[in-house]
Length: 574
Ligand code: TEU
Image 1 (cartoon, protein in one colour):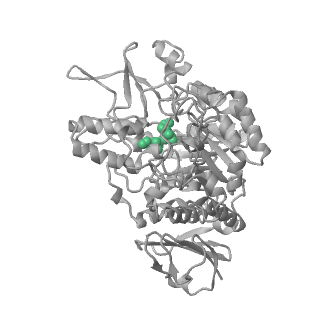
Image 2 (cartoon, rainbow, N blue to C red):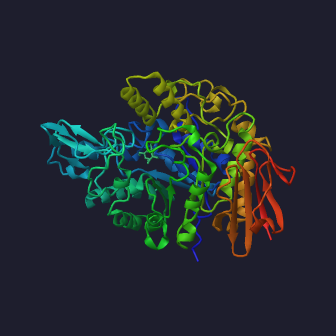
Image 3 (cartoon, rainbow, N blue to C red):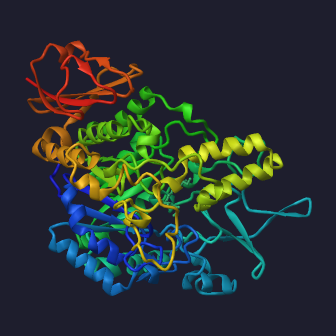
């Protein structure tokens, strides 16, 4: 039997510091802002907070480019503010985890500055430097890999006449995990420094990219481009097990929890190796199955129509299957984070008449699934993507602008192709998760003080009148109120809902998601209408014949035989 751990039954609330709450009116969220809302966070019913990178950074990729692991980014506050946040979180009986970003640093990090200073620098080998390939006398990078933000993963350095590797922006050079001295410096500076100050664990960024294998050319899948998708090569390389085992020894000394980000891993056996307790690697991972639905091989090369409910069910079934594949493995439940568009807009309906029901339906689905649950700021309010009417200047993310510029370049500025690119961004861009939280109907939606010196760094949504925290706190029919209800239901039926076995009961149904949860003798069934029309309640034979008792409905009392638009229900069976 699997061991019970706090983080298994936990519910984690993810905070994006720049966009959560601005206490001092500079237009950027900060640690004091987070402190001021800890009671709000706790009132939702979560027990752990995860803070996205708050480290000193030039912010080329919103803090995922760390200049100094041991220092807080000054606009967010000071190290003292951070220590206070840790203490105040603990004082409320909650835990706090940080983002661990150690696949790469900023190019401004002292380590990289030294590394690039000369080929003889003692830190040269802390990053991944390679000579050029010359073909017909012309200089080429060492391989054809496509970066996560477009373009080559190699950047030419004039000063020392070599290329360095960067799987993300050129300003995010990859650390060389092959070097044991580098690894130990990482553990000390990025991990132990904060573990000593009391943090309870880490969300581990791009954790499966540390070991890059032989770095051979990737197969050509995009003949239009010089750079080819290589995610299956630079993820899950041959030394991952060894690196994570070593990292785990540090974490174990502090009994720290880990959740690793695990893209490009279709092989479930590989996932099991990361999260099975006896392997001593990570506690759990974020698989990308659900959030990648409907995306093209190159993320934005897709249309909003690519999504189907059976694909959503399959993706959920895959992540839920971890509990069945290994009794000591664990999984996660999430539909949003700072890299994803809003779930109501992607998986349900953000039309004004369906938005609240959609938000509640997704809350019900998530709370009925097994694994550690992750809730992203604003999701508890039913925040949606920003509207199509906003123009390109409102997109601040490097991922979005690089894609748009690439399309412009490739098509010579073709208006139709550019319009399609913008439609895709409207559907999938990371920016939608990064707009300021809607706290109230005050100026700037209460994100910044009304008399702020500066405008918020991203444009606040215009719909705060229908969606803000202050109003929802007092409204029993709100998405927020339903999240609170569902988290209570989840806790009250912890075995069944958090630890139970999942079964998709009607995989091909295009409109309704019916799934069962079982734990020892207990059984529940969730039935969820993923359309804006009513549906006859139909339960498959195995559960249809059982005696059922309504545990919760996302719409409240209605006609038992008919599911309302975007309604979800959970029944207990006996
Ligand atoms: O994301 C890594 C990742 O694999 C992606 O989901 C990435 O955002 C996507 O490929 C872009 O289209 C992590 C962080 O969550 C992300 O915010 C950072 O930008 C990235 O690592 C680099 O540190």
